[in-house]
Image 1 (tube, rainbow, N blue to C red):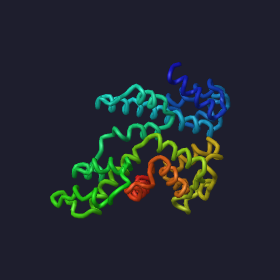
Image 2 (image 1 turned 90 degrees about the vertical axis):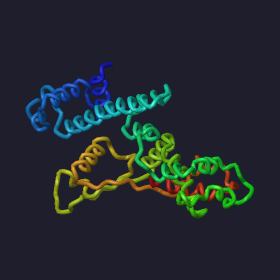
Image 3 (image 1 turned 45 degrees about the horizontal axis):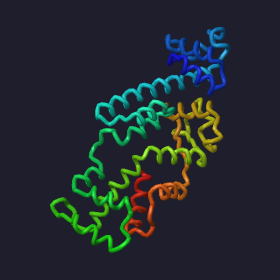
Length: 277
């Protein structure tokens, strides 16, 4: 199926419209016609779609095209690094959201110097992997960390050594695409979305969302598009409230393998840090 036809079919299904009406509307938008013009003077072409429906189509076609372009860029970048596996390629190609693509790209994305990269440069990666494995139950954490002390690398204390190792662990956890997807799914399933006006004196077309709260899972697609547009245009502040305790429990389920390990407390600290990244 040709890409434009596939996009039109997808949008039609999401917005419960006829695919032919969507496709014709996209053509009119691509020709440079404005939304008000199309709604008023091209009803016979669009099947009588109103202005709001046309804006929703405009938002979605822009998003889907950007998604496709981003996939191509990400695939090219990872392939140039020689790290593109058939499994990873399939996951990226089948992603339906930009955030999914970014999550998959994160471990391969060229990085600025982070706390984790600095810690690796100081030679702390072996300790971080030992910490992550959580196999050691005997002895003390100080005995294990002591060989990594190195004043020349600003590793002047056991605390500094452990903090560096935790930075590496936190980055590993934060770059786990499957875990990020699970946490996002949990957030959307349980969290309420709130939106507020950036300027309370500004009465705009987004007035109904100036003091808005609703569970994410109950928000209709047309409202999501309107809220996203309001945020993008600078009228709305939008956030999703998260049950942090429940989110941290998901992290523990994935990464706290052995509560008897001498590293258990360090893993807990690293997990809390990773969630903020």
